[in-house]
Amino acid sequence: MMGQGRAFVGTSGWSYPHWAKGVFYPARLRSSQWLSYYSRHFCTVEVNSSFYRLPSRRVFEEWRGQTPPGFRFSVKASRFITHIKKLEEAEEPLQRMLSSVQGLAAKLGPLLFQLPPSLSYSRERLEAFLATWSKQVKGVCTRGVLEVRHPSWLCDQCYLSLSAAGFALCLSDWPELPVEGPLTTDFVFVRRHGPGALYASAYTPSHLEMDARHIEEWCHQGKEVYIYFNNDAFGWAVRNAQTLIEMLHHRGVKEGIGMDRIGKDGPE
Image 1 (cartoon, rainbow, N blue to C red):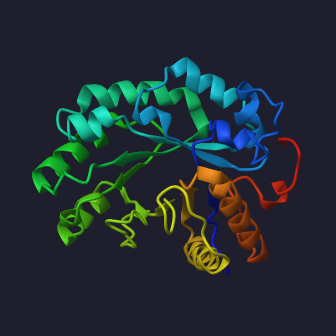
Image 2 (image 1 turned 90 degrees about the vertical axis):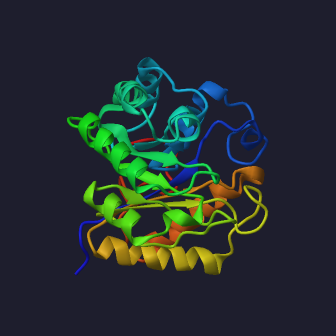
Image 3 (image 1 turned 120 degrees about the vertical axis):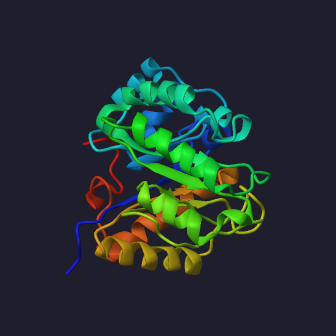
């Protein structure tokens, strides 16, 4: 019998001008309406702009108001935390980020911390960061995700630390370091960067079927699954996400806010 797990399928970002050239957005649609239009087709999005500059709480509140009930925003943490401070002295920037993203209220999904390829594993560094996270996140309805890009992080001690903190290890096909597991907590976070040319190549139906099979298994185990396509060039992210949603629908997997949304022209 299927568990209560649901799948949240979307893209990494939505504000791409080249998507307005017959790729996804209608040509005459104003950019201020892109998010609302996007949310009629997908139940989640990964916010990438926050990596470069953290939006204000008011901006997050505006985004919340442009999307239907049940929509989820995953938010990528500032590079100040991951690339400049390298997870150290994280208390103040974490507090600032958590204060801003609470503008999303119930639509706040996981927070993604993507590490640079140059940062190697340090147990002391990781556990100090996770301790700060655990203290700061109390009372905030969100979860943490770590995407690593240096092979030293793929070790049992790292997995144990993440598991103890309820932090997910991001499953990713980053070319230099694909990560296929393990699962370190009770939800799954997947990023798809493109199977060939980074950000600019499409996944084949057979690859998407493999993803659909794994997602079905995880949902049967009662896990929430988030998967984002980052191959935004040429609109492949949109097309691959739409195809995966259709595959999950045929498998009877529940999407985040209901598979009955597929093909509808407006939010419920």
